[in-house]
Length: 290
Ligand SMILES: CC(C)(COP(=O)(O)OP(=O)(O)OC[C@H]1O[C@@H](n2cnc3c(N)ncnc32)[C@H](O)[C@@H]1OP(=O)(O)O)[C@@H](O)C(=O)NCCC(=O)NCCS
Picture 1 (cartoon, rainbow, N blue to C red):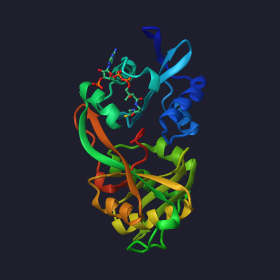
Picture 2 (cartoon, rainbow, N blue to C red):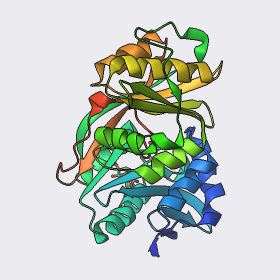
Picture 3 (cartoon, helix red, strand yellow):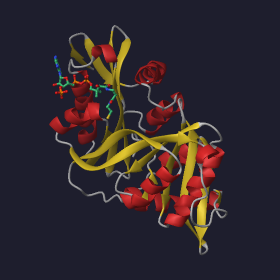
Picture 4 (cartoon, helix red, strand yellow):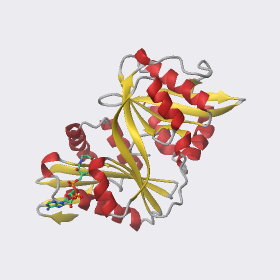
């Protein structure tokens, strides 16, 4: 445990999750208590909190994929306790932990508020993405391409789905995507020429349904998956995070009547050893998970 002006820093525990979710609620993020639980389950030693008089003031999570790529997320400091160095200390805790375990490459999706802090710590921008918001099926026009071939994921599809996810992110993150799929409203695959060529899911968030991850090497298939998933969202609000460099996805999100909400910057610390492909990512999994 580290101390700074009565603020303590330590690993996150199960008992912290309600307080962590209250911090999330204060900043209006879309994750759920289930998302916090997933971070802690997948990375029991890699999540940290800042507390003062047992009150939770800050959080940060990390997950390591394939022993190669570590992802930092859920970096939150209570609005009344910002600009006192708590964010920097939390980053120090998680970076010390990750580097102590031999992390080779560390990434995160930075909000404009976090960007400067990460830059000071040596992170460099890789590419930008945009959070879009829109309605479920209300504004979903027929998209080009075959729309009737997306089908529900079956157990036998998992090997192909994990390979597809790996081809887009550059590392395997099977535990994460399986856990996301288990807690989703709908998980679809897009078969093409006798194989699974893409997949995507829609899950519930606190403020809106969340579309993603959605990865497909064929744009027609990606459009078909989007269309089917948006139908599953009914009239609910939907968030969809799109890499700006993915022109097909940016065009699809606009065709669906979505509007941009906020920018994010994907940042990296360490050598560029993980080759991710924004062109293959129609929707990311979550800014806190990649
Ligand atoms: C981003 C965030 C986590 C930063 O937390 P924080 O505790 O305010 O961060 P720090 O105090 O360590 O650093 C923030 C700034 O305060 C400055 N600062 C640090 N200690 C200070 C002090 N004692 N007095 C005045 N300023 C101070 C830092 O130099 C830094 O300045 P900069 O904005 O010019 O870089 C916080 O703003 C937040 O929770 N934002 C909402 C959620 C979010 O966007 N999270 C980032 C996700 S990627």
